[in-house]
Image (cartoon, one colour):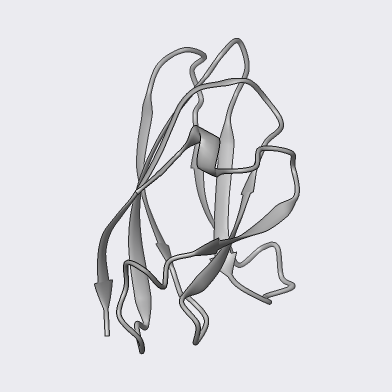
Length: 104
């Protein structure tokens, strides 16, 4: 659903609009994330839009340089189907974020 070019990778939080994929009233979203970074560790975090608590996040972290990390993340979207994501400012070879399911 989303690839490296769709996402900003600068160490700051950004909105990710899932409203075109998930139905209104969705309570929880399951994301499948694959990241491969070049010569460093890549990290992606997701949280509910507007949540100021950086500890209430789900994290995908590529621990071994150049090898794919496949992770399932769970996140609660806001009423408009938007979540927030954060990605470390590194060079990624691959980023694939797929909406794998949701609960209404």
